[in-house]
Image 1: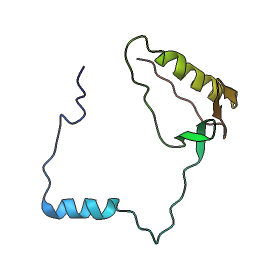
Image 2: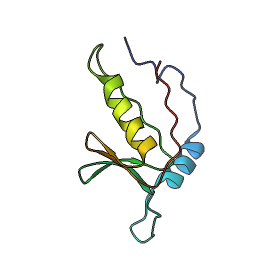
Image 3: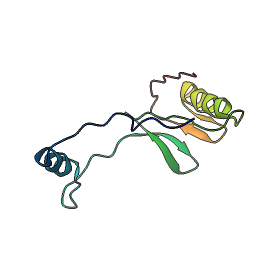
Amino acid sequence: MAMDYMKETKEISAEEAIILWQASRLSLSKSYEKAPEILKVHDSVIGTLGNFSASIGKAKSKKTFNVSAIVAAALKNGTVLRYVVNNNPKVVHHNN
């Protein structure tokens, strides 16, 4: 199965490219707001508020089991199988 995320492209002018580039640059002199940490494994943050994630892998590689543990931790607002969820996030889970 090939990834088709780059299937559609749009041509932009040099001026549009410069505007997009300048808008996406980070400045070392500015302060940026840190997103609230929602999901951790041990002390590593693997999920922040406002982002979404996808669990991809080969067939029968325990993707659903892994996602179910994360959803259970979110519903519990606690720890399940070393996944730690806090800040009581709203959980949306879609298994396709």
